[in-house]
View 1: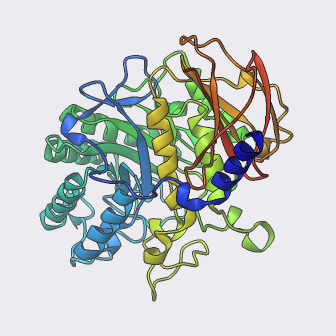
View 2 (view 1 turned 120 degrees about the vertical axis):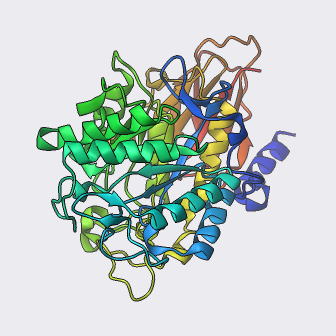
Length: 454
């Protein structure tokens, strides 16, 4: 009998046909529940009816600039089917977005110097947002990329002063306050302090004063968090960190996300930009390689098991909507249409299902229960628990020694492995589960241990 159990476990682990489907059925979210709000404990986002909302975003910065209607329909459908709940896109895009017309032949502003919006451009934006809503997708809108505030390496031009920023924010807020599926993000990969602070603050105030229906955050420069400048701002509802394209170990999450999670004036927090799939690591592909699906999984589960309210996925080819004939940005090497189906993009659905099964409410980081040394920051083991469950992410397979916390339910805990690559589960046959257990992963890949009180 024991031999048959071992054989069954082995067969489950090697047969992808037993894995969960990688297709999301139905609308991306139940946004009929209404607008979003911050949970009472300040830890996650939820619908107005109190049901938790899992923020799982795709990065599509150039969506409004480079795609036509048919392509946007295909893109939205692809992301809906992969379980994404949010699409992040920029209204005044980075790649010469003020001067190069979009695929409809329109530019965002009819008067750049005085920041006067082009009604034809925004009327089409309205249509795209409603299309997203029909699929249950939320649009996380950046009013502008950061180069229009602080040019740095961008195309620019710098057009915003505090006066223009507040007027533009007010105009956007009035226009979109009655849409159901909007989240505001401003910042555009920029420093929030010094001479830029009054501009970003004015934009936030303009938006929030005109639109009190939608949540808002700030997308900061790599290696920073919105909390560094705006944690106490009345317009900032949740924090966003930016881990970026050079960081491959857990230390940046400890320095940014964990720090935000432990703030006294706590707000939900998530990573708005880790290394993009198919992106050269630190812009040095010859010496450092390219971010792949393993890097995506590590960043995602490090975030989620450290208390994040969601996660933002990105693909280097997709954010810029790179097509043949266009100049690649920062070494992009793929066509956006084919890159939609890279392994990492197909695997985020398993994280969503896991987190929604586990529950965002009352979930807290639990690294103190891990008795096994992680070995290195690149392979940091992290844990998350609630009153009846515990989850542990192991970036590298092997040995795990763990303390089992007291659960509310009194039954014998059930143990199982979850394969984050295909969403399959393997039940662990272990006798005499006590306060301390020792298990070994099925192989040397990354795995998630789930302990559930029955």
